[in-house]
Amino acid sequence: MLPKERGDDAIPLVVFIHGGGWRNGNKQGGRNRVRPYVESGNYAGVTVAYRLSGEAKWPSQIHDCKAAIRWIRANAEKYNFDADRIGVWGTSAGGHLVTMLGTSGDVEAMDGSLGSNNQYSSRVTCVADFYGPTNFLTMNATAIESATLDHDAADSPESLLIGGAIQENPDKVATADPITYVTADDPPILIVHGTLDPLVSFNQSELLYAALEKKGVEKALITVEGGGHGRGFGPKPVEFVEAFFHHHLRDKKTTWSDQTIPGVPTEARR
View 1 (cartoon, helix red, strand yellow):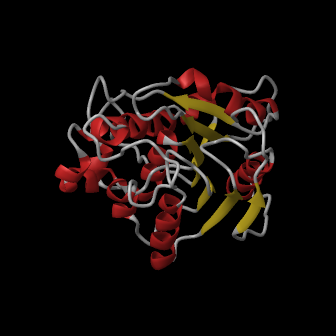
View 2: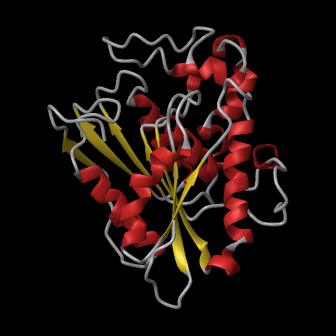
């Protein structure tokens, strides 16, 4: 999506990757996420499709996402993109994939060779991760008491993604865990997660935060007290994302810190 009116300068991009347990959803679902940025005239917007787990197994999904980032760079001159300013945002499974984009930069096995733009980098400038899984093998152990999804089952979203029950395939699982790849040169990551998420435990974001902290990566954790899986968030987290992208992509500087905000008791899914 391109703004109807824009200046002559190259514009940064906001890239959205959809959730759906890696088995549902499509790139159309991200249009409303990027539209406000594009309508401002200050950004281009991109929504990414990736092969779902019923069609292909890991790491096909991250290969597709990285091919999309390379496509952006290959077409930067054509569309007057600022290829050095790419912010990525994803929810749930999309949160997992954008975090993988952030932590696995220059990891050849995760880059893949899909498409005709392999001379370009797939690194990104900053990452907004909304409640994405980060360490599959711990998801059951850290789930809230009322959670009903068995992540260790052979038909769980995580098991279907890697092509086998996760506890029986720890080596393959490790390749899909964003925390496996954390290094000191990773881009800044904004993490947003509800404490009562029944599908992806809040601890998944705590584990990511700890891994980033250990390597000295810039990060901030927005804890939504009482928030569920994308429910009960209210408007504040989206405002944080906007400020985060303005900070890193447009030099509209903001002071960042970890914060806890109250969840909204009743709210349609955001």
